[in-house]
Amino acid sequence: MSPASEPSVTVMQVRPARADEQALIRHMVAKARLDPTNLHWQNFLLAEVDGQVVGCGQIRPYPGLRELGSMVVRSAYRKRGVGAALMRALLAQGTPPLFLECPAYRVSFYERFGFRLAGFGEIPWVLRLKWLLGNTLVRWLSGVPIRAMRWDGDSPFDKVS
Image: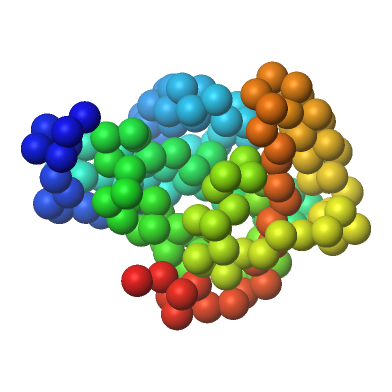
């Protein structure tokens, strides 16, 4: 898409998802080929531009821990601050520590918000199993390694312009 044909971001808001948006969330996550489990609308924030949902993300609760996941921004709206706005809103809800898994090429995006690579021993056992399975499967299918990251509450707002 050429810059002239890319949609501009004029009015953006990040808001909680509604029950009637469950199918949209599932569709966006499936299209992005992300983890299709535990997609409960109650955990999601959505990014809207001019009334159209263009991104989503959630914090999945597990017993004793929380995981950031399902971060999707529609391709036409990437590199326009939509993902950063979602991250700020999600982290504002967050109580550290917060974990995530991402492809190796996304590590730098999350580092901007205070996430750091997590050693295997730092990953809670529930997420270790998920990470091992995901890393094996994704690496086998795409050749891209998956990285585990952790946020300890460092201020993301100091690092993001």
